[in-house]
Amino acid sequence: MDKSLAQTRDWIATARTLSEALPYLQRYDGATIVIKLGGHAMGSDAAMDEFARDVVLMKQCNVNPVIVHGGGPMINEMLKRLDIRSDFVGGKRVSDAATVEVVEMVLAGRINKRIVQAINRQGGKAIGLSGKDANLMICEKDLGEGPEPVDLGFVGRPVEMHPEILASFLGSDFIPVVAPIGAGRSGETFNVNGDTAAGAVAAAMKADRLLLLTDVAGVKGTDGSVLTQLSAAEVRAMTADGTISGGMIPKTQTALDAIDGGVRAVVILDGRAPHAVLLELFTSHGAGTLIRG
Image 1 (cartoon, rainbow, N blue to C red):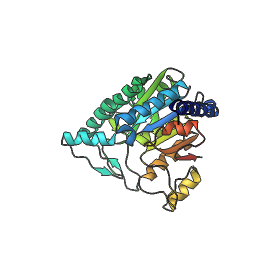
Image 2 (image 1 turned 120 degrees about the vertical axis):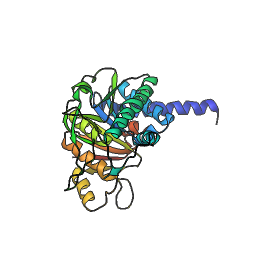
Image 3 (image 1 turned 90 degrees about the vertical axis):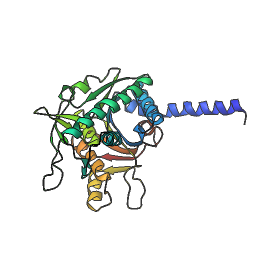
Image 4 (image 1 turned 135 degrees about the horizontal axis):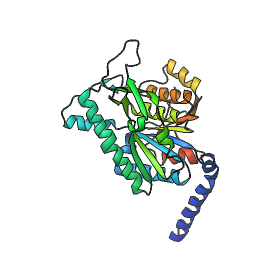
């Protein structure tokens, strides 16, 4: 095929894609979308740059993205370098005073500013925050989910949210990037699970969507296929019968809590897929599993 002809067809395909996106651009005009960033999208510079470009595009389309991030692998790396032992109970990191100091340093420092810089490199205006800023996230000690309390140290669960600082960015050029570090009422610093923090932020802002970027394609049924849409009742039933199990349970529970808190819908999707966020928001194809009330 003639090279110029092939290039023309590529441009036409691009124009057709943009045209087909119009109803979705109108649908999300002015909407608040909270995105939990973790896993593969944080692992490489190329993946981070692609994510950042997509977020800047969202902002240019008058969507209001709010990024909440994790950083478990980077925390593990720093704790190992400092020879600080770290244990997990029920998937949550036991955080003594020495551990939470490192967690805050890595999350609110190294990782948060890396995401901010990536967005700024793509022409955006990102602002780095933590749950401590303006008392965004007030926490109490997380004592686990079982009947017997478990002392996880300085691991917190959000009990009071003050999203005014995030609301002040709506309609502006700025994109907030939030590290999941919370403040206690007595001045403590709490390490908060990234998914939990994202769900709390989304509920506090009554977000249109909460997107949980993970390293799996979505919620799978008994036959192993990804389910594109579920109701809250179906999620509870699938958890009760064991179809939803293991590491997917905390994510679906975050989704249920967010929906109960006023979020319109939650999507669990594969952050490794190219342009996963744009596919979910601006195409009929979508991505991952959408959960509604």
